[in-house]
Length: 264
Image (tube, rainbow, N blue to C red; front, side):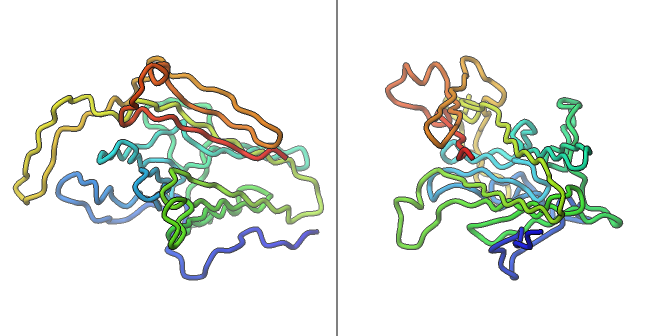
């Protein structure tokens, strides 16, 4: 049996919280704010000045700061990590968020069990620019995921790259074989974050804070498509839009996104 540590490089002084554990009485801001989305906010992922996404301690991706100066806080359930495990003929699979969609979509998916008094299912850790999910007492395998962007001191070029890295560590604590699959699903959201208001007006609220009209094209996926990209040891998917090929100047919110993984 391999005794290798399945949770490497997690410092002892992170901010941490059990996965999916509800808050009893969280602080609530008076107005919706780009600075405070409430308690379900994870460490941001993205280079300096390059926009950001975020994954909360529930495991869901809900922070979308991809259109310059704009901000959306909304769970997108199709953007998700999932795990399949088989050991001794027993099979199980979970999407790694504790919050299923409220509209009834993806109803056949099994969602990761949240922290309860009688069941500790794992811990979320954060210490910028890194954060970790450690999964416990659900899978036979010991699993952890480290997520970060390359924020390097005195290296401003790489620090500005719009990159997020997810590094998984799996450890079999038994003497029996385990079949394990890690899946990432991602919705093509090209164009969703563009402001549909052509000339938004800036207003000042009674507390002195500015606010202006922002109506993103959330859910508008006309002409979106994906490309499979593969070379000798990598495989990935580029999410794009037909209109991007026709425009010499890309609009904010119309950039391409890509996911890539190393092949075993």
